[in-house]
Amino acid sequence: MLRRLLAPAAIAITALATAAACTQGSPAADTKPDTKDLSIAFLMPCSTCADRFESKDKPYFEDAVKQLDPSIKVIANNAQGDAAVQLQQAESALTNGAKVIVVSPFTAETGASIVAKADAAGAKVVAYDGAVEGAVPAAYVSFQNEKVGELQGQYLLDKLPKGATVAMVNGDITSAPGRDFKAGAHKILDPAFADGRLKLGYEADTPSFDPAKGQAEMEQGLTKLNDKVQGVIAPNDGLANAVITALTARKLNGKVLVTGQDATDPGLQAIMAGNQSMTVYKSIRTEAQAAARIAVALAKGDTAGAAALTTTTVDNGTGKVPALLLDPVAVTRANIADVVIKDGYTTKDKICVGEAAAKCDL
Image 1 (cartoon, rainbow, N blue to C red):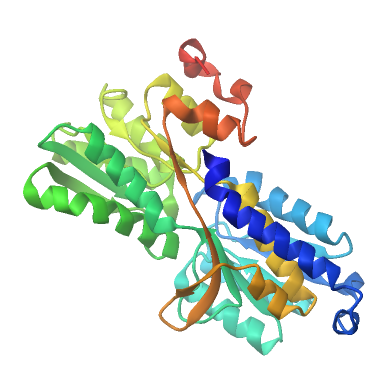
Image 2: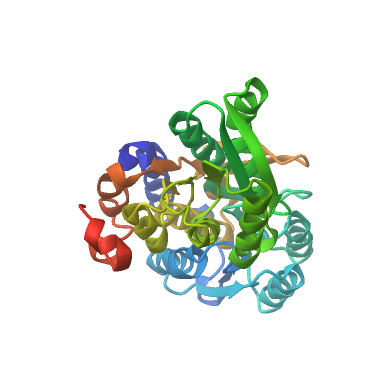
């Protein structure tokens, strides 16, 4: 299922990369810069946003660049939830000669500032996993982030009885992904709130996607609703775990539907244990490899080749950005094996542990 969804983009990327490789002997290719001194920065926003950035995105990106050109250095840094730190990391990378910055912006303003500084230094920016707003980067590689929220909202709409109460513990809406996740969920759920099929009982946004803050928000929601809640929108597995912790304290875990995202091992364990209802899987390897191909092309001065690796454009309010947007996939207990494990993202041994072990039938 997942491979069919991602195949067109993956095939296009591979074909275009092969075509680009065939031109290396041409006079135009001979004018490209010597790669031995090239470097690319890979800047992540925070660990609270999602632990995938360090455990998945970073190694996948580094490996992809190494496969494409082992002489190119990757400067990888994590801002750990500090916009000023992310900007400093970008400045440092540029000072140290980075020709391309691949960044998942912690805030929209940070992303725009990084593009401005890169432009002044003659470097390029690739927005990664979250859009840059207020400036036009060279490319944007991500998933259809609004669709993530749509999948989560649709799950609750399909599974909850008429009149059920929903709480929404959203992510950080100062980031483009956080706004997109929230917008997608509301796109599906607002009509149901309007006509009474469901009730919106509580809603809060979570700075930095911080699980500790998310748990406090869920506790406040439960108090407000006298524990009368049947479904919770949590935008990722980290916040889903925080929600589950709050529910468990009220003996409501397993009785309330909880959404998530990223198909983390803890999230999948919670699904197998019956405490989390679904997650949204995104093939991060595919995303990181695509970003690496574009970044390497830009670092070598092949702007046309980089643009050819994109498949659409996205209007970010400032201009049109060449983009590659991949499809997320809803994952429940029923398709963990066929989607997440089959794709090589994790293994049964990593999921069937702890509370999940006794209920694991993968």
